[in-house]
Length: 50
Image (cartoon, rainbow, N blue to C red; front, side, top):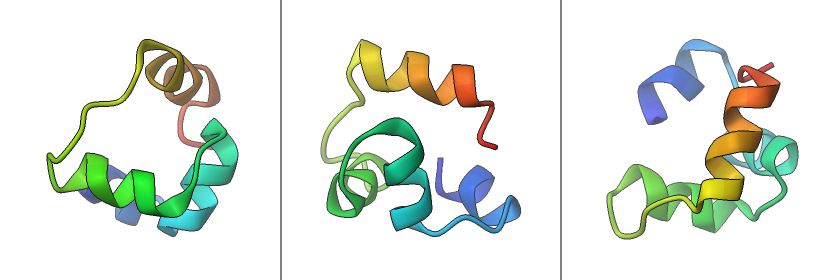
């Protein structure tokens, strides 16, 4: 997730806003501490990271 996010020049905060969560949660996803919910995964796919 982090590699894709940085390739698109998105900060954790930018991505969090796009999928409706907080930046610290994105960090926890990226470090493997938690897994995204189905709803967050769907939003990520729907926004196509844009």
